[in-house]
Length: 213
Image (cartoon, rainbow, N blue to C red; front, side, top):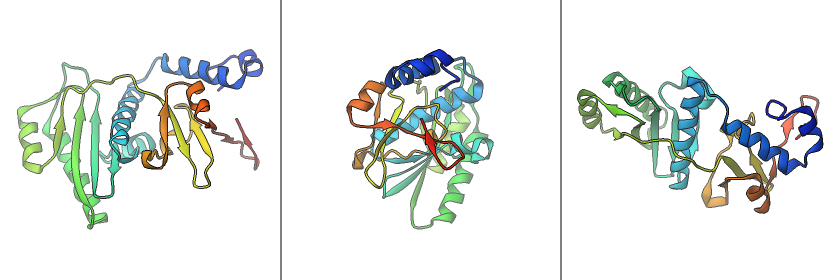
């Protein structure tokens, strides 16, 4: 929180107000190329969660070691390996990115042969004709010209013991939080909305055996 708030704001503002202020400033921050990519992955993951998938955010959690698996989405019947590319419109996606995605699909199939594994390539720009042909031949779904749109950023998760906790996007565990809409998990646009739904802010681990806000 103190990255986004002054000491005076942190010490004196009510929790809900200071958390919302921090979130507003976080959304307006100057982003690196890596942060822009993660922002896009989170948005695409959110769309699949809304469609009933459970999503793991491999790109955000493992960085360059994600092996092309930015998102892994499961719905019980199938697994989607999703690669996301938020690039400028003047750039195009070449076939090497399709081949990388296919390779990681094969690896996923080897690791869990009983699952039906499919590949999805989502980008804010377009693919070359050769890349499209390769994707079609390999059975990979392509979604082109998919812009980033505004969406609710606060993850509201119900723990195994029924505790309702919300996580802000700057929280350390944010990308590890699994949203399962069928069990009551959801997203909220504001801190006030999350708290009105009965969720409280996630605590952070202090390293001393206690938790703090």
